[in-house]
Length: 209
Length: 209
DNA sequence: AAATTAATGTAACCCTTGTTACACAAATTA
DNA sequence: TAATTTGTGTAACAAGGGTTACATTAATTT
Image (cartoon, rainbow over all chains, first blue to last red; front, side):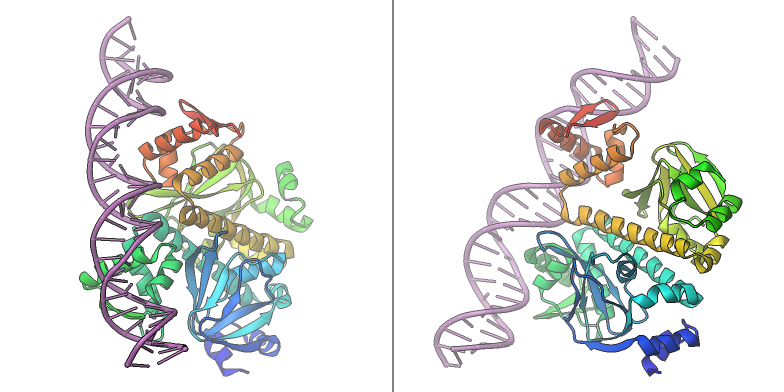
């Protein structure tokens, strides 16, 4: 049994299921920036996240993107879940935000385990629930917040999922993920710095509060 | 067996499950405008929609609202699904867009049927999938579209779920659902009318294309 | 019918965000 | 070290959308 499986999912799954996961799952490490899946691709396996963070992005036809949310340790991809059943294409893009470790499960097991293990069903339902709530949170941000508030919220999220609390992004990268322009981001970042919320550096940002 | 159950869900569920639904479910009719649930309330039952449409709205702390999507015949509420399991409060508001007929299922059956019926599991997974996609669509609209495009898309949706294809709303009501102001909506509606997309009347709008 | 209320049209103005343009500094490459 | 690339700061301006104010017209109430 992989120790990391036990550590992260031992409290969630019964032993029989853990053993099955251990047998059919493959351990995988991906580096920061690794593209896990793009829009329109078919899903081949379902990831169980062990460590690190995966960012989930939406893209429009012009290639404009928008950060939806992060997957972290103990999470799985709800999109994958249904793609498996319906054999439909991915609606989202997933990129490793940090180095990450995962266990990949062949999608055929999904249906089987849903019938067999209550803990698996609960895990899947729970995942859907979490993802829906994260989507709601994203909608709240873009519908109800102004750009400066969205930016601060974004920075706090970014700092949380990064290992050292630093936000290692250029203004241009931030602009892409919030679907706005670099100039707007630079302007608002400077404003936040003047308010004492953050400290700006070349290539990274630190939160002060 | 209620005929409406067979008509709408007969192809989805096996006979044993249909019989169970028939036994424990209660038939319910609600009038247009009926508030099914508010944010913060606990879910008591799970609805299976037979006819009509239910609009699902998100609200912020100031009471500002935003239309997320519509539930229609054959749909169920994905939010309800997880609320049942986790006993958490509703994150959304649901209001009957038209007169609607539903079958209400006691939430205790959820878990039981998930273990027992493959068709039920598939239905639940499918519902989640649909709802996630609708949320993505909503996000696309507010993130990538300008207000005039959002408005037109909204009008097309509204016309689709209404029985006669008319949009029976005041400009103020539309403004609430798109989270903008009445003046903005009146302005853009007039523009759409000048473009030949719609025809404006007092208290209702018709699509021309 | 007169008065009131509800719905719509529109002008004028302001703020936020997006765009263009360019300066400058830090990092990288030649 | 010089040249180039990358990242940031900022000004000036444009556009979209939100706000206030008020007029007009249709429906409802008295």
